[in-house]
Length: 211
Image (cartoon, rainbow, N blue to C red; front, side, top):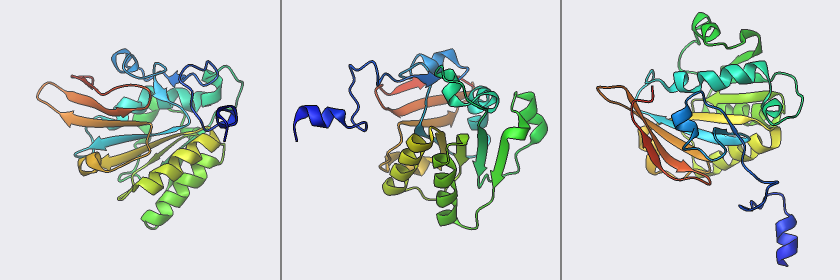
């Protein structure tokens, strides 16, 4: 295959191409945005957040961006008119607390909570939601997420122009993943550290007391 034919493939990323320039969704945390290519969360991609336990600030980290997405679809931030997208929660280990979400600016009328029977159904549900083209973001809490499953989620997010966020245990740190961005949260006496383990087009970094 010639180089010209290869570069015509839309799945080939060219770092110098303006058409393939990464545009991020502002996180609401300027220090984090400065470390992410595109100046924010990677759109149409899978983000993994590794945590030792629930309630470490992982949702607080996402709230500013999710609030924006519940009001306008990701395409709107790219300059294209679009209707607000759904924010889907797939198998959350808790019942989302509506008053707190509303206080953070989440439009509750744009929220969906999905309760799959098992992990295989969880991944199927997340993949369907991502590829549907109607969900601005899909949050999921899988017990297991191997490399093949992460690739399917990544492709579904690209197809549906959505943002996938998977919450995983710290033990997943050394497992392969197709995620465009992998973060690890750790509690300290002063707050929560955010470690950028992997960032497509970027580099690892540690942000102290971000939350």
